[in-house]
Image 1 (tube, rainbow, N blue to C red):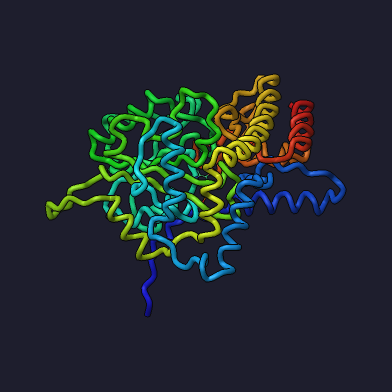
Image 2 (tube, rainbow, N blue to C red):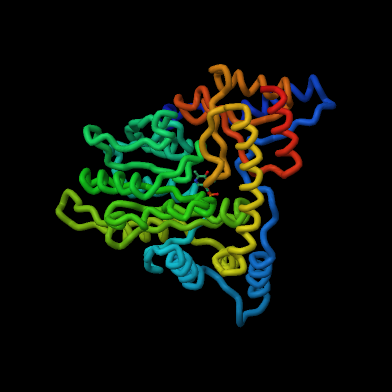
Length: 398
Ligand SMILES: *Cc1c(COP(=O)(O)O)cnc(C)c1O
């Protein structure tokens, strides 16, 4: 009989979005003529800029002739994409090398697959509330997870406790779901902690393009010492609208090494290359053409227009909450607005309250961890008219 990975028995039912859909469907079945506005969406909605679209077409056209046809690509991704990422980081004042970059089909796969490099016997530190992928992928491997509290007292930016040891630390900044973003000083504290504890930081920078405050770090590698203790995950999903096209990249510095129990010095860059080339055959040439265009001056400009549109939505949401004296986080350097449910309401009760009274759908904070129990997430990925209308309805209700 096949023996299964029984760690799957320890996974919590992922019922957040199915429960939301269930409650909304039930409401619609009773009130078929109401207009529901969804501000719970965690996916981009605007079309992709023409520079990327043209490049994707060029990628397709290359397949039509044997002189330009492309089969399997290089293991880490095509040089033309990796070089454009090196240039992009350089423009942001961060120096990385092309062979430290691995092109992938997205940050979700990479943040999940990276666990292949680590023994089961590691203490994994995860903030609460959290993007559920970090927790579930480690649970699947049977790893112990310790949580650090992100709450209103620390502005949802938890800092390390020198008395608590962790081997692997997940940080996401700008954060999903809270929108909170670490400054350089705070990230430096995390890097120093990791260096002192010989731990590794897994840094999820999926929302770096939403940072407007020039002083905030877009990459952990803008912090001294980070190349000795951190891996960075990035994605074109939220930055260039590639959620459906699928492309991301992971940066594993060559300086990141760990001494094995045998005494051998192991390079995580070499291990990740081995892992990827064994279990993954790369992202299509077509998609990589589109990705390289996303890092070009013109492509960036077009994507920035989309981000600006979402940021304007975020401002509309934030202004309404501020007017109503609702305490909120995020919304400035992030597409997410995370706010305290009025009158100490529990987040699912508040979900029902909004649905029943103003037909606006958001995401209950409880779905991201215990510290989300009295919080609620709205996103700026909707369209302008709906965002305005939803916030007018909420303003009248609260
Ligand atoms: C959306 C998102 C990603 C991006 O995932 P892809 O697989 O690249 O689409 C990564 N991390 C977080 C926290 C996200 O919200």
